[in-house]
Each structure stands twice: as C-alpha cells, then as structure tokens.
Length: 250
Ligand code: PTJ
Image (cartoon, rainbow, N blue to C red; front, side, top):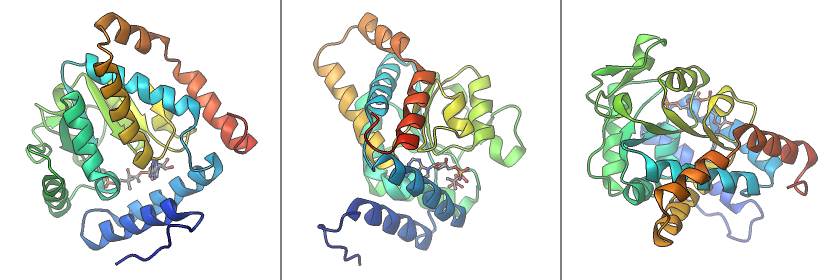
C-alpha cells in the first residue's frame, strides 16, 4: 500500500497520483488517464494546489444550477472514478442527480469495472451501460449515452471532458458544468460554468455549497440570481491570471 508521510509538502498531490496508478491497475483508468493526470498536476502546481476564489464562486454557481435542474446528471470517466468515487456519490445525493459512466475510450470491461467501483462506494443506480442515446456531431463510439441519462439531462457535470464532446454537449442546449485545471482547454472555454480546480477539491466543494444553499432555504429566485450573476469569462480570466502571476494574484 501507500506510504507517504503526511508532512510531505506535496502529500495530497502524491496521494492523488497514487490513486490514478491504482485505477489503471484495477482496470478503471485508461493509460491515457495517466497523461491527463500529469497535465492536470502541472496546472495544479501553478495554481498553488488550492481552490482559488473564482473557482469557489464557480462551484457555488454549479451548485445553484444543480439545485434548479429538472434532471441533473454527473458524468464519470476513468480518472474521476479513481480519484473521487465516494465524493461523486455524495454530490449526486445532495442534488438528487443521476450518475452516468461516460468514457472517451469506451470498452465494455472498463464500463463495468467503473459501475461496480461506484456501487462499492455507495451508488445505487449507475447509468451508462444501456447506451441507447447519442450526442449528435461526434463519432459513434464517443457519442454513446443513455437516453434517460445524459441524453435527456438539462444540467450535466462533465469533469475532465474531451473538448469535442464538451462542444457537442453544449450544442445540445444543456447547461454544462466542467471541472478542468486548464482554463485554456476547449472544455473549460465552452462550459456554462467552468470550475478551474482539481476534481478532488471541486466535487466536495460543490456538495458543500449545495448543502449550504439548501440549509439556508435559498429560494428559486435566489438560486437564479446566483446563476445569472456568474460570469464564465471572468472566471477563466481570473484563473489564467492566477496561473501566470504565481500564487498571490487571487
Ligand atoms: O476514462 P476515459 O476513457 O473517459 O478518458 C479520460 C481522459 C481524461 C483520459 C480523457 O478524457 C482525456 O484524454 O482527456 P484530456 O484531453 O487529456 O483532458 C483532460 C483535462 O483534464 C486536461 O485539461 C487536464 O488539465 C485536466 N485534468 C487532469 N487531471 C485533473 C484535471 N482537471 C481537474 N482535476 C484533475 N485531477
């Protein structure tokens, strides 16, 4: 098992990396997922491995969207399943969302391994295996979704999404909440709500905001105000500034 002293300055980062390695060993995460993780780590390092204020605001706007949604769905890929399965299940419970496994490099084995892994972490129903719906405008394998899941969702959370699919989902008129450490990635650029933060911090943060808003008895009007006041371009600019300037800009 893993032995990293908690006093190590980059403890969290090393722990996260280890989870991705384990994900590959268990057949949950793809080998490309290792590369994606490396890219994410580089951006996280530049952000100071913290949730910057604009990402926190984005997480609050995401929570408001999810609470307002008729049919919210959280999309899970091989990296997300390895990094924060329990946190995804908690978010789904907090905002009454469906969970759907949706892979960029889809194989039946990995689909099933991830569904089982999420069930082991407390998920009831996990969608994605039916694959009777399609996202228009992208190639066959990568377009597959459940018709009663992402296919009919009004709000989707897509962490670490590929740019083409993020664009295609946006074109379906869905509210898209993207979690991506790279503010310049196409996924972040096309998102209704881009959260430039590590998935391991962003998911519990959305859940915390959703619980706070609910506990405070926020009305639909108040939630709608949060949604309308969120400025995606400003959030992306703030993240890029934080990265370029080092850690003390935001
Ligand atoms: O499991 P699959 O088959 O669905 O494949 C998943 C990956 C992630 C491999 C696939 O979607 C892919 O290749 O993604 P990309 O194009 O590499 O994009 C991944 C994006 O996520 C990059 O912009 C990274 O900076 C970002 N990223 C990586 N790790 C994290 C992250 N963002 C937030 N939190 C992370 N831990």
